[in-house]
Image (cartoon, rainbow, N blue to C red; front, side):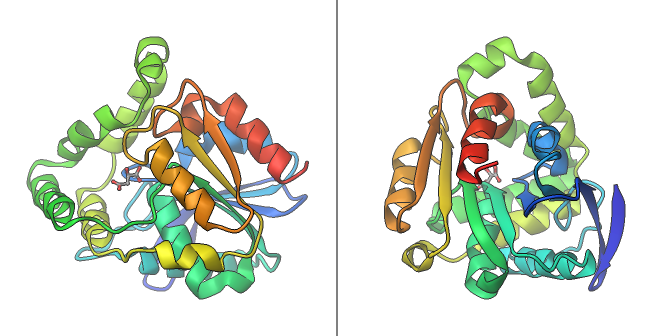
Length: 264
Ligand code: MLT
C-alpha cells in the first residue's frame, strides 16, 4: 500500500501488475480497496490494476462535512496524475464507486477507455432516503462505525452467501467497522446530495459492461437493466448466487465476464 498526496489529503492505493490497460477498481460504501481482492488477484497478470481507498475510507485521510461524488471523482483524476497513468483507464465501480463513475465520465471522459458498473444506481436519493442517510451520518459520528455497519451489512449479500461464506461476511463486517466515522458521515452526506445521473447514460460511447448480483436488494436487477438499456450497446451480466457485493460473493462469474469484456 502506498500513500499519495492528492490535493489536501493522502490517499492509500495499491497498484499491481505493469502490463495491459490500467484497471481502476473503485470500491463501494462503507468499504475499502480490499473488497476487490479477488479481482486484484485475477487481473494482476493482465492489467495494471489500481485499487485506491477513497477519501475517508481504508487508509486514506478523511475530511469532514460533505464529500460529494464529484469530489471523489476529482480525487481519482488527481490520483491517476500522481501515479503517472497516462493511458486511458477501464473504470470499474461498485455501487458508490459507480455513483463516482458517472461523475468521472461527465468530467474526465477523455481518460476513460471502458466502463464496468457493478451493482450501482443512476437515480438520486428520494428525500426520505437522503434524510435517513443524514440521520445515519449523525449516529455514526456519535456512536462509531459499527452503527453504519449494523445498517449496511444486512443489505450486502445473497442468502447463500450468509449461509455458505461466513468468512466473507465477517471480513466485510470488519472492513466496515474499521472505517473512519468522519469518512462514513461525509460520504453519506455526499451520496444524499448526489445528482440524478440518468441523463449521462446515453452519452456513454465507450464499451460498457453492467454487472448485477441476481439477489441485489439495493441496486436491483430491474433497475440495473434500465441502466444497461440506456447506455448504447452496454454488455450485461446477472450474477447467480450473489447480492450487492457480487464481485466478492461470486468472483469466478464476475471475473470471467470482465475478462471476456476486456478480451484478455
Ligand atoms: C454501496 O455499496 O456503495 C452503498 O450501498 C451505496 C448506497 O448506500 O447507496
